[in-house]
Length: 462
Ligand code: NAP
Image 1: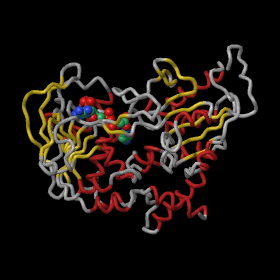
Image 2: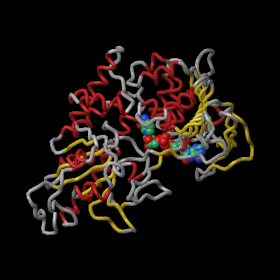
Image 3: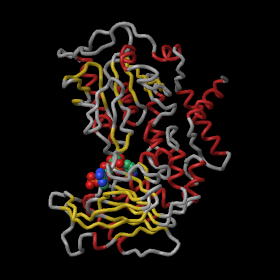
Image 4: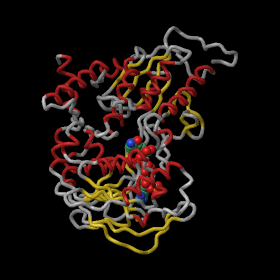
């Protein structure tokens, strides 16, 4: 609204906004734009994949069905008449950023942080060394997953080391430790189930470079490891604070330590996978000639400020698979700046900054705005903050529904692109349910872009 409280003049059409990235941040942004805005708004929710939901589909572990069910809630925003899902469209390839901006009054970038962070140590590129992003993309059925590389890395694995002690590391360790009957009810693609069933991992070590008090995993996820059907969680009691020490002041840390103490009482059981949580070890080198054979680690101590310091004592952990799970980072779209250090788009309250100044009509929300932190719901507040900035800019006249705009989907179709709309997504959804039913499962994820598009074309009779 303007300073006098009035709405800006309209020229007879709603404000048109493109949201780039149909994951939780994008969907929450679309919801905030169409649900509460004081001006009529229509949203084109663009995704480079033919499917919506971003990390809810391709990040949340498939053995977490309750968390994945959030897509039912997110779907409500897609069903809103003011929101149009436009999948299978890559900004920078199918349409440039400038062209997109010419079609709409404002753009909100919500495309996340898809890249892995490297460890930057020797041996990192050996076969058998994967980023968690590779493995997660594969087991969730992401069309861009490098199936050959991941499956070659998994073949014959007995001992795996997962570097990092965040929730993604626990997801990876848990999935590797599960047995087929635990994974069968998930929506994992069939080839993933088959490859995991053929892999009998005997030991998974989750490696923290600092202590248990600095781990970023959450208690619920830590606790869940204790429920694995055929894996025993092991912790060296010497790595935990003594029972006679005062409890950690942070309640979340105290709860984690309580769970770790229960695990420290476990002993390895023959025939069961050992899931070992090891702290105070930082990787310095991956060993191996043709493929990974181990991780050389340096022992660390943690100072009063929580910083790790190397002790100069080294040891080798044998491993035929190493998964680095040390965070994600974002990248720019062609024509959009990104801060290389943080992997985020420079912004102030969600307004994109170019050369330090707010760029009119450009906004950002989600991981590409704040970095890869928080749970799905964190994006709701984040997206609302961004939408508040956008609507304030409408109120002050920085942006508005001025002039004619060509329809984005028609433009894309005219240049040979194949945008996937909501009814097309419903066809994919139905095809996945039907594929699952053919094997007695509730759903089987279609993992190839061509298979996803074939489901669309079949339903449309093309
Ligand atoms: P994260 O929580 O930031 O964990 C990254 C881990 O990598 C930390 O333990 C970090 O240790 C370690 N690390 C970083 N650089 C390292 C290095 N060079 N060598 C060794 N270790 C290193 O990130 P994440 O696990 O990728 O998760 C991303 C976000 O998604 C988080 O907010 C997470 O909670 C969320 N998520 C939630 C769930 C769930 O709710 N179930 C599931 C998955 C993800 P330092 O602390 O020492 O840097």
